[in-house]
Amino acid sequence: MDRYRRRLRDLSKGGDRNSAKDLDSTIDEIRRLSMDAMAARLPANAAEYSALCALGHRYRGRLEAMTAALQEAFNLDPTCPQAHLIAGEVAQMTADRLTGETHLEACYQAEHHHRKVWDGAGTDAQRNMAGYRLCIDLIKLGREDEAKVIREEILSRVSSEKARQNLLSLPL
Image 1 (tube, rainbow, N blue to C red):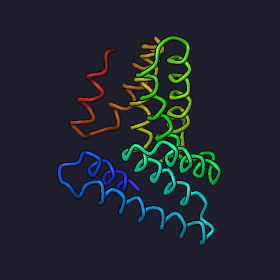
Image 2: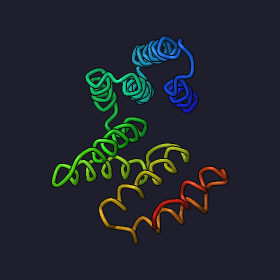
Image 3: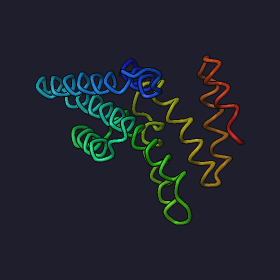
Image 4: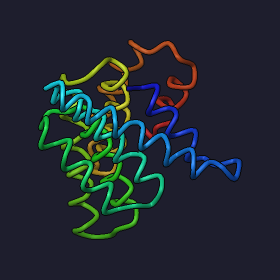
């Protein structure tokens, strides 16, 4: 799963004229994997792949397709870590563009999704990413002390210098 997430991210950065085409091909490939998992009666796997399709659609700017793919992922597995990570990222980005009550609502929505993963669902890498994003949510909500505890826990587990730099750059 992480391999596809990285591939989608790398392709979304563009760089050559075939990036959009390659991104669409990757979304199609992931969609086929999701359908194969559904046919094999593996709803949790199908949900992870559907969530990755949502990420690809987000990178392509297809809001309706992204929303439909996320909804499919949650219908297949309401606890799907990949879907919660992506839904949290989308809510976080939405909050950055809003003000007032709607900003707070989006921040709480992001926190909800990131906390679902942080509180136990997913791989260590997914939990670390959710924890980092949860720290950002908590900072926006004025709960820096809670964010500090989470940051310290993640720092005790990660060895990647880039991840450590990102965590240490949080305004805490």
